[in-house]
Length: 471
Image (cartoon, rainbow, N blue to C red; front, side):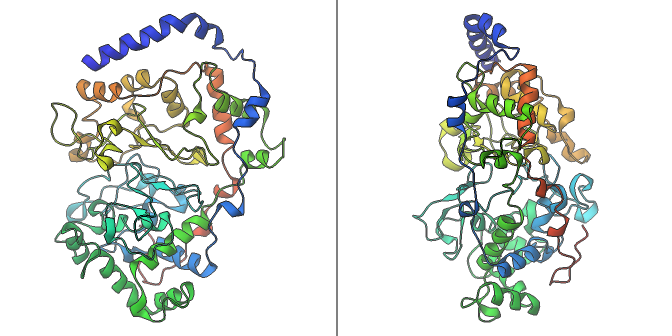
């Protein structure tokens, strides 16, 4: 419990020095400096901030997004975990991927030969606004990021094997879920795509991406759609590659799930009545901070409330983990986040700052989906260490199965592992009152684009493969 003791001393020292002032400040008696506050606001975004693919490419991507033809066992689509009916996520703390049954919070872990082998180890992040140029880093650990030194334009786990005709970082990202056994490929021995993935053959002859392209090439309706979406590039079936499919999926996601007409957006464009007084007050607290140099906007900055960087904020770890081990531990039941990509111990337990657009729609929150309400995750940020040690496990949204349940809280039930998370925290306590939290949440709700509330029209009625859309 060394880490916990050190942190307790550190926090006690902070409070001993600033306690009286904090007690006086808490309660909302602040003098806001409007000129300073206005300078902190981002510029309004518009069409120039987003990619503009052709309607044909968007339509192709819409079909591919929801077509199970792209999974090894043809039983799951990209849209299963990023569905229009679940606000581009799945509503679960940790996804139930390949082999699961149902959609969203009703999805279960399957049974018999089709039972899932594991939960996907990280929360399915929402896809809103990822067609904007501002997003240069994707996945919770940033393992896909813009890097012009690579032929594909992206630095990814595939290195130089990634095709060079990918159009943007979102397309680069779309290359990878189909290669994951837990997400879409299936387990070795179940199908040839799973076998290729297990062997690490992504780009070679008979690799995952070649096999998927061959499936698409064999469907006449898809061939015509690819020709329309990529004129001059796809002339016949043999020209289709999985990179074309990834480009189309990114086009659909970027256009269909653009969300830049929230009350906050309209306020930035000059409509001072777009937000309620409470939301405006929350916006000031969000950007100006707590009066002691701490603000939400230090990390949630820029036009989409993300700095595209990585921070350790003592987020609770649930699930079976992602292969990391804190000192003296085995089993790989922890998740060191960015450190697993860079190998740098300074990145241990750091995760990408998520965008806050449409955040009111996209629970659960955190890299492991630890918090099921917006208030709970905001309160975690205000006092990370206290929130970590007092984490309420009932907030996790996880379909039950005995063998998986035994691993869900293996980290949070181990005091040493929790101490290790706490020791890496870099977010100091904030002096926001309960009333301040109310106002900040009012502002976060004002980041919701009304057009994102009903996304039913984004789901096709059928897909060219003929496979069922029903999960």
